[in-house]
Length: 299
Image 1 (tube, rainbow, N blue to C red):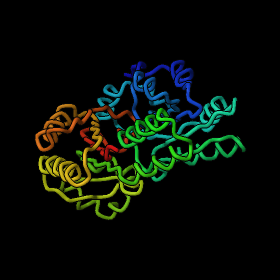
Image 2 (image 1 turned 30 degrees about the vertical axis):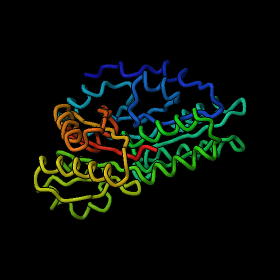
Image 3 (image 1 turned 60 degrees about the vertical axis):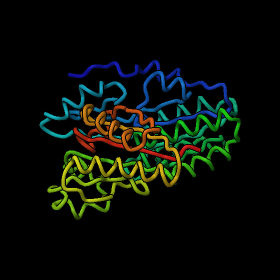
Image 4 (image 1 turned 135 degrees about the vertical axis):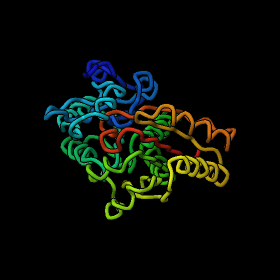
């Protein structure tokens, strides 16, 4: 049922020894391909997906096959943060010669990964390890990593990189259109929308990640109108703030995400939205049929 070829563990152990004195670390919910890991020069630690009481690195699971399993699973799998020891090993290796680490992780409101990373950084007292709560995940985390790599390559200092990343984080928007609210509800990731669960079952709300939590952005009656509303938001932000880095993501909804991409381009001809997969950990919490849009101004 499971195919182990996303990125092998031996690849993750040796990857991302940057020529820079500032090293990037992130977690698997950025959903980077092997080529993207090389390009961004980032070291990665994997969260776990727990199926039948067996924790498995999500990087060892083929995303598409896992989504098919999730559609028919008798019980919804659960997830867990990376083992603290793996974070400690990565930090120790990268800072052993006095180099600096900037570690960007998914929202602390969605996972314990940030706290685990902070704890391991504190364990290596005196080492220059800076752990950032990105208050986002998936394609939002991807955009912040891309920005961080550009800043490092531009020769900015650690303090400058962190300051600029925080600025990007404040202007980043991540929207979600889910096919069913049930997965978010069961996982306790609905945030302020928890009390509206019964009502939300009858509509197709546009959700967004606000201050690290999943909240309702707007209540929409149909899925088609929800996609149009998100495309219009992208257009409005482009017109008011200037060109945007736009990334789209999908969970078992490849045809729909392509339609949304075309819809955005029809409203913003100069836009170049890219499409990316979402892996098991986030898929467990948002469910099959989810489409996401992340955007941040291009500086």
